[in-house]
Length: 293
Ligand SMILES: Nc1ncnc2c1ncn2[C@@H]1O[C@H](COP(=O)(O)OP(=O)(O)OP(=O)(O)O)[C@@H](O)[C@H]1O
Image (cartoon, rainbow, N blue to C red; front, top):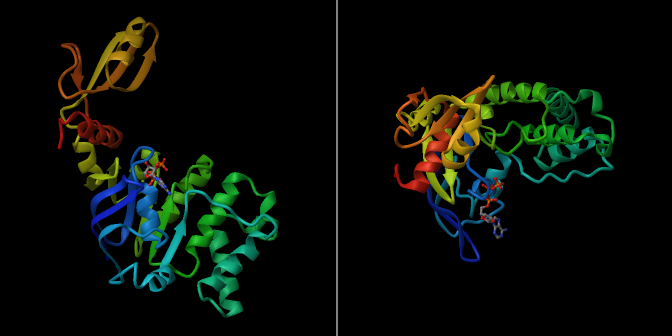
């Protein structure tokens, strides 16, 4: 459905994406990576807003460079930085966005707008000006805008940042439903968002693809490299300074620390079952330390 081959993008000599290969079929796909990894650049290219320097791309058989208009008809996109017109109401903005997506019939448009508002739980605020919305509500309106017109590709750049826990759960369920028949790509720093809902995950680091596959395969990257040890709490600072500690649990004067290390950090450390987050850390650490290619 979506195929990227050796996709490369440079900004004044800095390589934001370096020969990235990626294939996405219908489903809910997570995109993880630290700050500056290239996630927004990749998403902006998929949204036809940024032109890559080299590489091949096919989005539902269309070429984003020569057939961008066709792709935009199939696309729902929420960029990382959202600026919404504060004087419009939520419903007015969605009507405008629906017109831009070619939904000319007013009746059909109203139905679409109402459905999208319901999906993000904003019906009550439909006729209020956007300037009265909270940050999370604006975020949800931007998501509603991306859902208009039944897009086949939904690209969401860190959409969960401003959502409260209840809305975040609602949003995950919405995306799961959407991912049943569409390609949905979601970037986030929150591994939990991906862990609970995504079919596959892609990890970018410094513009390079470090992993693409199922969640359990990502967790498996840390197999044999996760350790736990119960230690005197007074020693905790030393271990935080010397080792990669990914979790800690304090119980009285003792603390249980969870480490990621290529080898057993000290004799008392016991091997632990890796989580998806451990796999993500291992993918990044492995890339940096060279203990994984
Ligand atoms: N318009 C631009 N001009 C110059 N450099 C840019 C531009 N956009 C991005 N970059 C650089 O490209 C690299 C990738 O940036 P990008 O925004 O794609 O990363 P990201 O993974 O989305 O980061 P974050 O998680 O912080 O949003 C970074 O080093 C960034 O500084």
